[in-house]
Length: 288
Ligand code: MBD
Ligand code: FE
Image (cartoon, rainbow, N blue to C red; front, side, top):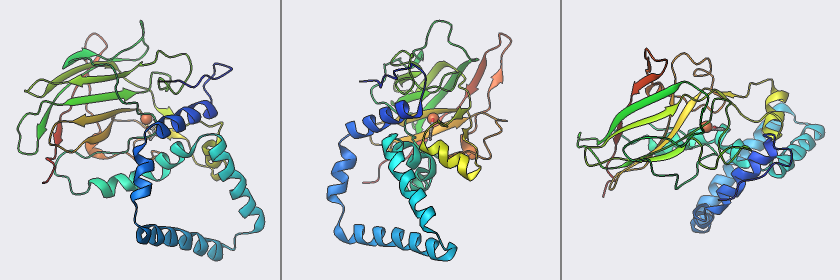
């Protein structure tokens, strides 16, 4: 896996954006899906989206200056490699809702731009790859993967998250390749126990085009602290989710609109300063 090098070794929107764009393009399947989309469907969706844009222009009498500002901004989103960030922050949560609203098992939420497949195997009980002296409150998380009928499932929890400074390995400089990324494979009893650290709240890059939009609109750039997971088991729908921490000020106004109350953990402080938490997953069987 190639990691984008920032010449200054300082985290930048352009560097993390380029890495996210490169990672997305490395997976061929979205590009194959485009080829398979029927003409009628493209016609319908493209026409409706354009018509919504036209309505907005008429309703608010958008000027040529505003049109050109939009054109310049869109060009820069591409140049910064920030299309994955833009779409995952402001659009993906609705796609996710529609895709999973039939489920009886766990609620999921968006994947975001920073997933990397094939993270190191850590066993059913293990510690995620981290640096010596990794900053952040130690967190021990136990749970079990079951099917909707309660049967334990032999499956996997892929976990990835930011460090205590809010940086993701492979998308920010100077981090070991797999820092805070690991795959926990359960036995037939479905149980796992993961040792990691509590991540920091995350501010999306402010120095790129998404940051410009946020500043120009007077929004904030924060996501609450979160753990990303993909939970899978044979014959079951893949669950993509994020877990959040109680009391985070951004649980109620996540810039990415991805928090659901079912995804907020209840960690308990321990005498040694660490935290323990129980959170389990229920997966929906794939319907034949
Ligand atoms: C993230 O870490 C994230 O999870 C999302 C959805 C968008 C930007 C950064
Ligand atoms: Fe994230």
